[in-house]
Length: 342
Image (cartoon, rainbow, N blue to C red; front, top):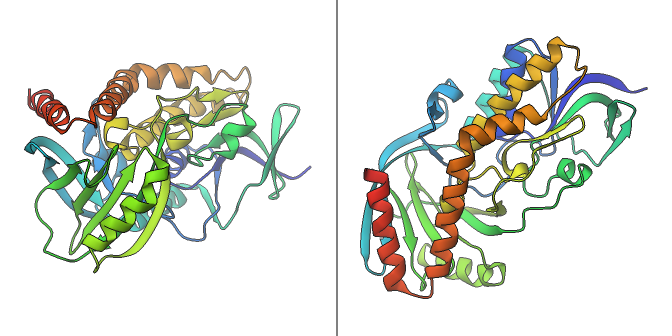
């Protein structure tokens, strides 16, 4: 029969851990299965939007552990000059941040299992068998990123529009008080480079929506920063969000492409959606998961974040379309400044 679980969460990133924390806090048993043996396994700029649609990152997180710096300026460098946005960004040490989120979830009663790669899912009546762990779950949540196994099990496509990014750490100069993103064809055609200030160094990186150009761009960028190290790469979903529910299944975070495409930011949106998912699952647990209607989750997050996802994707596609013209790209960035400062 296998071990019985109410809810299994596949993936222990910010969205999956936030979901586990919220469920456990309401007394709903859950198990997180994370394939890596330590947290923070993929490339990330480690910058989280400070607030979004009335949701504050620090309030959702509930801790200061792993918070490196809070900045209120975002400088966009273009060939036509710098554009200075008034925009709050919380810079985190993502390994410390995810470790703390996991500890919060554990203290509330969640089970967090590391080094547990899920290889297969199979329906068995109203349950789902999780293998090779041999767990029979009432609900399985995919928080397993761009290449989600849970999404594939649900019969949903992979995000059709995505980017590839590489990030590392650099101590070439003291960290400043602003996040910097460089939108220049000579640096990152159809993408951008970034410099985000941490405590004593910078998280730097480069990304593009043209995978065939990525390796050359990354090599060039690394030559500009020979002192940088700890490089890693990742795929980043940039499509509009996908359908996020099925029979006894949900998707949260990158697995559902719940990302603000304009800056490839998925940390806070994923945490918000995880909180919404927790609310729906808590109510379902009170009915012993009978007459399970997980469409309520999708309806709720689309009402909350749908316009932001739509506008972020539209802005991203406009930026990519304008990349052949430095002049038009610079003009669009200046328009963004008006949007963010009004």
